[in-house]
Length: 397
Length: 66
Image (tube, chains in turn green, purple):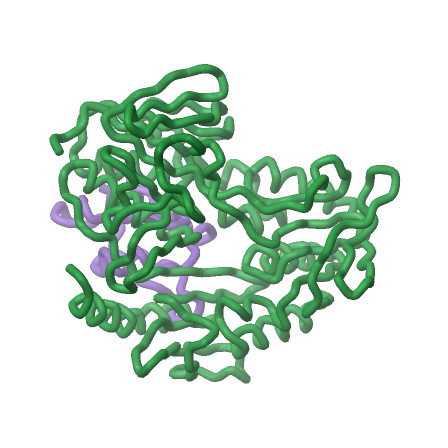
């Protein structure tokens, strides 16, 4: 494929911005258009559940770039105008305001949408947290809240619970697992996380499915569990998962299945690529379709796709990286630590609350996870890289 | 080129250290960035610019005219 005259990036968050930046960094001189659904300049999402929600940062501090940096990109930003449809064969995008945008290469970077309870939109006191506006609305309500329930025992739910607790609120965390993040990182880590939250005063009401919300006169009054119990609350945060934002791609001609399905180079169709949370591509080393919802993947995949657009198409085989900050604890992981792995502490000590754990499956290292040991965890990344390389050289080229 | 870091934004991912160990390191305790060289030599300018763009916390800034 020859170098395109113009590139359209649909999505103006980390993955979209990074795609535009990587194109320029690699010398692309054609036109770059970045289309964003939200009215804001590109901002970063990880701080939303932490520094922005706690008020430690003014919202502006979450902006990814300063105005002069954006100007230097020489890209056209069309913000506050969501894409509503794509014709993949014609590489044409229609927007909510009626714009019609066509480009030689189109990059899909529309991210995720939070899952919600049916009807929660009309209920006062119920929140999700995905956007800057969501974070500010939730923060405003937390200021006067008397009892908060966070629904969701994953990363986002535990971060929100930690932040709400840190600002002094009574918080209960509800979810179906026995301990937070258990299905992701296994029982050892999950127990450690449960102990942290309990120590800091978060009430854990886990091991019971949440079936819905209780309300009175249009305001939420609590969260209903499958046990019949109701957890009372005047503010409820719903953080029990999200789905790739692909509804606008119905009828596009692309294969949509838990994300935009791509080949190993992150190409969804001729001249169409996907990056970030929305992209589900074939990871050669792991020999599986993979979709990563983490911040560093947005940037790394964007650089890969920018290269592919410019003619350098290669399989994308990253070693995933994940982090979460909860209270004053930094948790970081490289690779694919999973619940079914054999977990060994290889540095530090669980009891002292500082350690690095190695995850192995079938005798192969699949990941490392650190708890309050960021540098030491990174220094063990190579072991994961080596194991990934071995599986790559054994897999299909 | 003049490099500055915002350790209040740094998320301790170590991305910059992996790319440009001549310019960045991490603190032992909490993994927060340490700037080793605020005025890196010219052959490092490209990789430092890449660090600015790939830092997952947007914690690195450069000014080119310094």
